Image 1 (tube, rainbow, N blue to C red):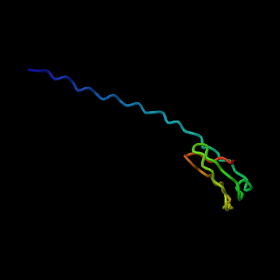
Image 2: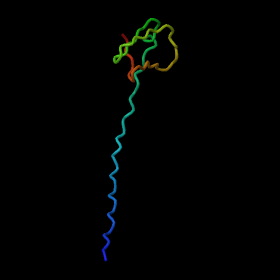
Image 3: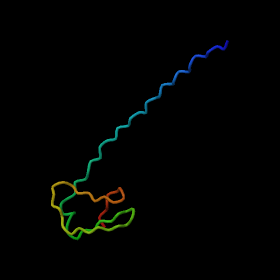
Image 4: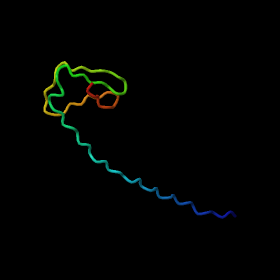
Length: 73
């Protein structure tokens, strides 16, 4: 008669340490930076955006292209 071997126990999976990222403080842009005629360029694809009408909102408006914030040209 064959003898049974005890079943191998599953090894406990080590938990990955969770690294908490500090929240990035957004730079408060002055309202004057978002004026009519201001041009923004994407550093990845090179697309250029020109502001025709400023929104005038109190918060910061980010122009995002290709996953990155567009820079003032």
